[in-house]
View 1 (cartoon, rainbow, N blue to C red):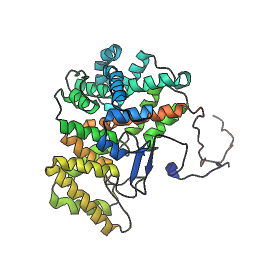
View 2: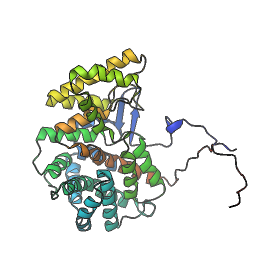
View 3: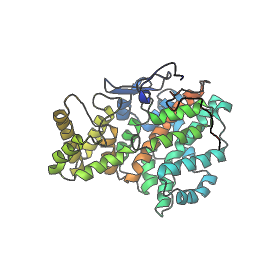
View 4: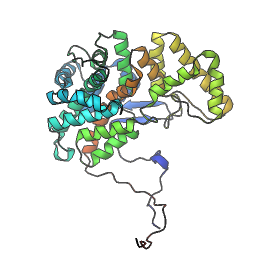
Length: 382
């Protein structure tokens, strides 16, 4: 029996597989950053377009660079004619598969129409153009598909609105309130990238084969669709619904903790302190106020307290999904669009990682330890 040269933890936990200049998560400190800047500080002080520029082009823009970037990306938001014609059929054909399946199919059509070529055959400058095209198009496609699946016509993007405000405009057809547009923008910025999570690693593995950029994005979408990754915000809100009222909090939590059930919206594989994204989004939610926010804060407090009582030494804090669901609900996003909204942000981070991976010609090809029956054995006669 052969074995791999290096034994690694399940799930590759803590294994360093490459170097990156894009982001890092320091779980013991409760801190993460995009390039050299705190991601939370970026969410509090800058726009999504600034962070998009930082991730794909390497620096925060000044006023002139920001204006040039907006002029460069605004036309890319509009649906290409071939995709526009295909969207009704895609919306109907993917209705049972969910928004991410529909988005992946639509991006594939757009890539074929544009003639996006494999990363292996594409110059760095063209890779950036392809990345800008795909990431600019994602919000337009998501909202158009959502509206078509609900019997409404797509809403055209507006050049005078920023990324987040435009997203809400195209989703609802109504001018978004500035506070809600800013809240969604802060959520989007906080989820652009987050180290080598499952979807980012998936996108980079595909990029290492030299495949085209959109194929890499579609792979990332597949990973993000999992309930243990991007599918959690709506499930965290479902938890609040299931608890229902303040008098049921303690009983519900005790029952689920003692049963060993996963409490959606709590815990993270990297952070051993409070998730900084959750802390920021709690503040965003509290700026709106209301019964839902008060209830969410009460549930969070009791989960932490009861866990300390029932499972001493095991820290469990809210992760980004817990308050993300609350914020998106307060801003008028339907639950089926929570994970797609996550995808709209993460597509920017995926694209940056794909571009970085494309500069490395080494294909990612790990090994597995075989645990089946001893080989070789004679093949039995039929």
